[in-house]
Every structure is written in structure tokens, then in C-alpha cells.
Length: 356
Image 1 (cartoon, rainbow, N blue to C red):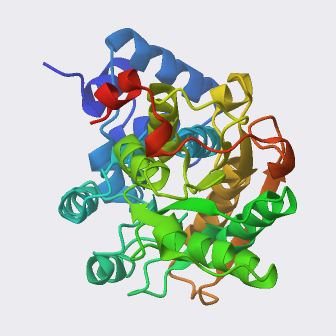
Image 2: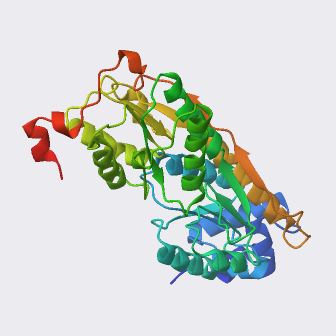
Image 3: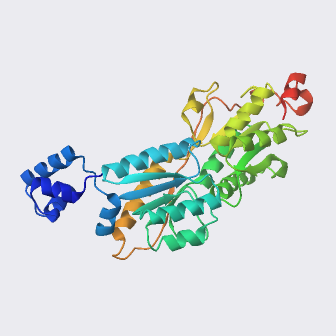
């Protein structure tokens, strides 16, 4: 049988209300009484009921973070930062994985409501705007990484248009004109905005847009592998590939290894978003850093602001941007010193047999 607050009060020979004030650190109880009650509660094995306490106080001290996966190193960094910030303030973080699946996201949102969370940071799929909007009337919400266009929720984004522009311009300055782009779905904020930065850089350089060089899909390694094969099978394959997320980069690296394509000698490779082993890889992979740590800190700041403002009137919602930056490493080189990329006609028979 579990030990109740009443059991602690009886053992300490105080009222239940006094025991409650002492153990929660609220109300007028002496330090000596609080220490004695804490010791007795520990000896009895008393554990407070957060649900019951939440019903009484109106606060669960639970904040949820809903992301697509933990394969993405940016999401890992964000989860670590958010958890540390919230813990320091006495909150527990509920980490939820939505798989970038609208149905799973919807089910998770319903469950979080049942758990009476105090706040939510979400990387939205963009398909459950009505549900998020309804939930925002009960719980402060901040969208992270992606905007949900069906809502007016407070949103923290990377400067994806500028980041993709900087990355593409870097490749152009190295002499590349046929630049393949593997980008996210166009029904997502990041997918659309990273494509827009790529297009802007080409336009400013006077390079005609070639639709055969652009492929979109989910941010998963399989997308990178499939799109890389399509790009490298072109009669005129690209001399550089810009992968607009690092999960897809894993698939691209698999294909270049299968086909014995050397980076950067045969193909320059640039990735949007960083992960630790990109710097350790040989060659080290050049990246556009989306500022995951800064994004997470800003999202927490904005959520705490909205949680404090709840019930006292809000000051409206805003969209915030964290600047992206180009980090040059060794996976890109000038086109003049690079050999011609290997097309499908120059593959070895062994590479052909590895093609899926």
C-alpha cells in the first residue's frame, strides 16, 4: 500500500495541511518543521501524487516536447537543452516522438491534454493546425523549426532561406553550376524555405533553374539514397550536391560509397544541419549550421513568457528567427580542381550490382 500525505501527517503529529505546506515549500512553516517533515516522509517512502497536486494547484509542472525523431542530431541537441532549462526551473519534460506522422501527432496531442501539461514545444507536421489552435486556448504552445500555416502560434525558426542561400552561393563561388538539391517536402516550412534560398542564389548568379537537379522528400536516409541515385544517373550529373538535411546525407554517403565516388574529388557535398561525426568524417563535411542550441533556448524563453502571461493577457504572438551560418570543411572544392563526376555510364560492374 502506498504511503499517503495523511500517513506522514499522523507520523509527525501535525495536520494534513501543515504537512502539505511543509513538503511543497509553500505556506508558513518553520524551517525546522519543514526539515522534520521531509525526513519523516523520506523514511516512510512517501511520494507526492503529481496529478492530485496538479488538480489542486492548477499546475502539473510538466512541459512536453514533441519532435519527429531522435535520428536528427538537431532534435537531440534541442531536447537536451530544453530538458536542462526546464529542470533548473522545477519542471519535468515529457519527450514525445511523432514520426512526422499527422495521425501519431494528433494522438499524442490528445494524450498530452489528458496529462494536464503546463506547456508544449512542438515541431509540427503542419496537418493538425485546428487541433493545435484549440489546444493553445488551454496550454501555452511554441512551434519550433516549422511553422503551422493553419495557426497563428508563436514560432521559433532557423533562417532557412538565408542558410540555403549561403550554402548554394558557396558552391557557386567554387565554380559549380550544376548543383543538385535534396530538400524536404514542399508542404513544410523548412522544405519550402530551403528551396527558396537555393533558387535565389542561382538567380543572382544567372544560372538557369534545372528541375531535374531538385528532388524533395521526407527527411530520412532513404530519401537521400533515392534522390542521389536519380541525380548521379543523369546524363549530365551535378558536380555538387547540397543536401538540405543531415538525415538524407546519410543516404547520399551510402550511394557515393557504393559507386566509388570520391568526395570531394568526384563530387562536392554540402549538408544543411550538423551532427558530431560530420566533423570527424574524412573528408570532414561542410555544413550550414541551423543553430539548434540557440533555437532551443529561444523556444524555452518564449514558452516561459507565455506560461507567465497565461490568464493575465497575452502580448500577441510573434515569429522569431535564429541565423544560420556556413561552416567550411573539406567536402567541397573548386570545380577547376575537381575531376568530372562519375555518371551512370562510368560505373564499375561492382557498383552496378550494388544499385537498388
